[in-house]
Amino acid sequence: MDHRNGRERGFTFIELVFTIAIILTLIGIFAPLAMDKLAQSKTARAQADIDAIAAALTNFFSDLGHFPACNANTGGDCDPQSNSVNDLRFLAVCTGSGSCEPEYPTFTGGGATWDLTTNQQGGADAPVNNAYNHLVANNPNINATEGESGLDYRTTKWKGPYITKLAVDPFGKAYIIHVGAMQKTGTAIASGKGWILSAGPDGNLDTAPTDTTLQNDDIGYIFCTNC
Image 1 (cartoon, rainbow, N blue to C red):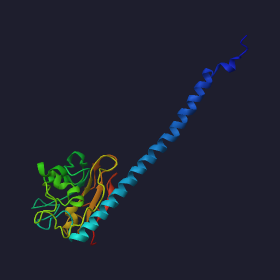
Image 2 (cartoon, rainbow, N blue to C red; image 1 turned 45 degrees about the horizontal axis):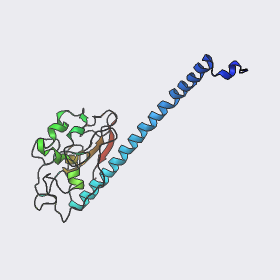
Image 3 (cartoon, rainbow, N blue to C red; image 1 turned 30 degrees about the vertical axis):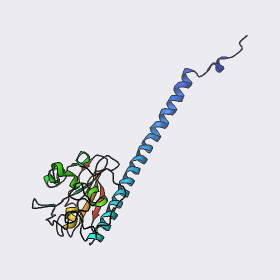
Image 4 (cartoon, helix red, strand yellow; image 1 turned 120 degrees about the vertical axis):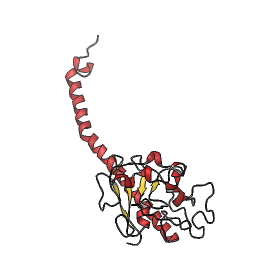
């Protein structure tokens, strides 16, 4: 004969509802905390990446006496605020040596001056704007040969790679280096200063090259080697 009572048959409906309510309450408390920690970790990674990029630029400048914005063998005006002859007005940091254009952040600050698609080398030459071809490989003209005499950075001075790993930011967009502003004294912010930026969680690059403070959720800082 089966002598089990009702309590042994399992949870009652009220007990089940009460248990679900407790679980949902705990989720409501801890889910925002987990998301906040995730956001903090992504911001910290972006800041660490930017520090590594700055260190690479410092070492490049120390060896060659100029930033990747200007190839010493070809010259050129690297003023990022004008449409005069430029080598590079910006470098993008993404994965690999091809064009970073699919990973460009949307630029919402400062108008067309820093519209990345317009201001890049353009078309098949878009990989020229990829930091990989300046900091990892000595191939600024993005042809098939690295370290070409008279075309690429002088092999006696270029001692890269200057950084071991390049990738998009934690939010899936390319970091943007305003090397033209760094190279050209007295432009953009002043005295060779330029931004290294992540567009942040929203993917919109809100900080203009003439801004002296970060805008909205952008991550980064103003950089120069001889300030």
